[in-house]
Image (cartoon, rainbow, N blue to C red):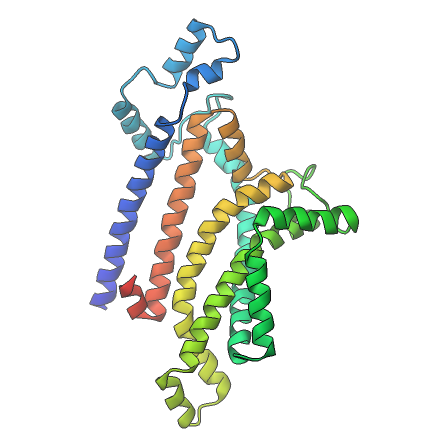
Length: 317
């Protein structure tokens, strides 16, 4: 128990340090953006007085360390700042876009786990045989296709040619659950590469576990094959798979930007792209912090799950 407690404390401290690093990195990167944000926001023919007013509103007339301190204190109190283009709190942008993004991510992860683990176990059970070769070939081929190219292909076939599914989510707003057909193609694209990577990792872990001495010993004791696979071999394949799942969710945070842009879904990815196009620095900073902190939390959770199923894997991590 003391070993588990010390592991949890170390990971929590590391997560806290990573969160601080995310805040510092986001601020430093936005500070390093080329050009003058105040001039860009002032329009094509900026008036010096307007530029000065914008610089004052953005606190660009103050030293960087003072702006960083004020921003960090605001973040600690849940204040992400104010949009430069609309005057709305950045938190409202996050609230508006969080629902569609969370829905896409939840559906994707809910389907990802049974599909990825199931395909991996299926391939491992038939190692070296036809089923294994088919699963391995298909997953490798699909993984090699970029999500944007796959999205264009699926939209062309199922939306434009066959007319089975809507090509975009335009007109549906944030009520995507009320229009499930609009979710099919985005979820398929988000699932494509994670299912492939997770299934291949589970297959490799299952093959190693099924060929291990303790599984051979369990078979000599007459333990049924299903129990050997699912009670002894599978838990040892879950630890690296859990860490891969966290990295997969990291990828989803990036992939959702592409998918939301392709299907015009009003989620956080679309909000971020619009903010970048408008040089709305506070919104960009707020969303970058949200994505970064989510990544830290997900990886922390994956480390704890991996340590729970296989303590040696957690320590090694």
